Length: 165
Image (cartoon, rainbow, N blue to C red; front, top):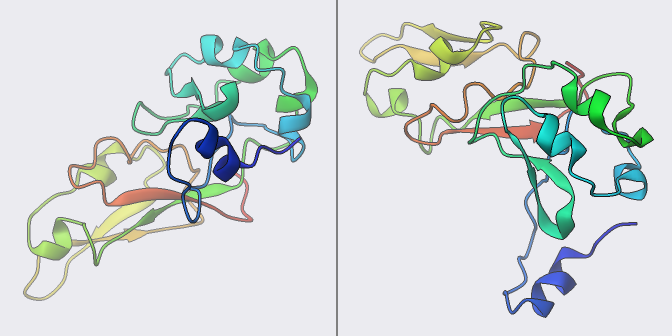
């Protein structure tokens, strides 16, 4: 069952959003997640990094500003339904919005995202006349989100991909 967020917003007196942001479900969420999830909060309570939170409608979603996913599997183990039973954790990766927000693009030395990435998917490449610029290796990125919260300019976001971690 899919919830129409624009109609739901009207009930709560909020203006409907033209295009709702992508909601990221817990790792191992199946395509029919909404049909199987009972909103019991077992995955929310089991998450050691506390990045799984109750979202709209009570469904669990990921909040990458709170931390990263270490793929421990606690949420999957705690879930009493098949909602978290996919073969791979997820299909997502980060994106760096260099032109709009990244401090390095603005000439400020910052390598926080690269230092936060255990997978070493973000490297900094020296540029003539500029500070080193971030370069993402999409093959190395696991989509854990470790680089999102520490970014001082909120230049990093998450996108859905066809790649699994």
